[in-house]
Length: 390
Image 1 (cartoon, rainbow, N blue to C red):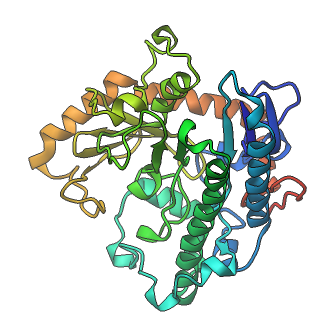
Image 2: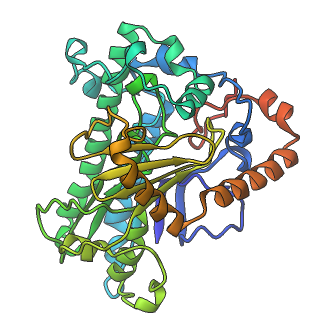
C-alpha cells in the first residue's frame, strides 16, 4: 500500500504508518504539531485567526501547488507502478489538502462562483446564533469571525466552493487516468474526507463542532460488486472502511474484524441496516470539554461532559436550526440517546483520560506558557515550506 500526499503523522523515521512507501508526505510540524490544542482550560486566542479573512479570494498557495503535485504523482504511479501488480492487489492512498484553510482558490475555480450569488451562512446574524457554552468556548479561541465583513465573507464562501471544485478536478484527473489505463472496471475507488467546515454558519469557522457541516463527510465508493448510482441512507462511519478495505484486498477473514465496530461498506451498499449507533467524539483544540455525538435513527444527540446536551431531528430539521434538548416533549428521546451513548463508552472517563494524556504532553513541551509563546501554527506547511507561527 502506497501513500501520496498528506498523512499528518509524527513523521519520525522508523515509524510504521502501514505504508510500503510514502511519497511527498505532509506530516505534523517538528513531530509535535499543534501544541496549543493541548491547552484545554482558559483557552488562549489563536494568534493567526486574522489570516483566514484577510487572505480569502482568488490565487495560488503552497496548498494548491502541493495538491497539483499530488495529482501528478498519483497519475505517474498508476501508469508506471500499478501495471506491475498483475498477480496481487495493490492499494494507493491519495490524500489532498484542499479545501483546507487558507481560503484561496485558483482563479479558474474561484470565478465559477460569483460573489453576488454567494449565500449568507445560516444563523450568521449575531441575534440568530445559538447560545451554547461549547460554541462560546470555540468561538472565543478561534476568533476567525472577528475579522470578517460582508465583502470578505462572500469571498471566503466563494473561495471554499472554488477549492471544492479544485479538489473535484484533481480527483477527476486521477480517475481519468484509471480509465485511460483500462483499470476502472477492476479497481474500487473510495472517496471520503476527515471533516467538513462550519464556513461561517452560526459565526463559526473551521471544524471542532458536531454540526453536519463538520461531522457529516462524503463517503462514496465505486467499482466491482458495488451498486451503481445507489444512495445509501444508513448512517455510516469511517470504521466501516476497515472491513471493506480488507475484503477488497482479498482478506475476507471475519476473525480480523469480528470484534470491530465497523460494518463493511459492501454490506451497507447492498441494504444492510445494522442496529447500532454511529459515534463521533472530539477532545482537541478550541474545546474545554469532551464532545460526543451519536446518530440514533433520525436523531442526532450531542453529549458534552461539562455542558448541557444538544438534540436535533435531522429529518424535520436537516439544517439543525432547532435544538430539542430543552423541550420536555423529547425527554424520552434524550434519555434513550444518552443511554445508548453510555452503552458504547463512559464519556466522563474518556474525557478524563484524554485530558490526563494531554497534560502529560503539555508538561513535556514546557508547560502552558511555553506552548502559548510558541504560537498558533495556522496550518501545517507542505513539504519544502517553513512553518510560520503567530
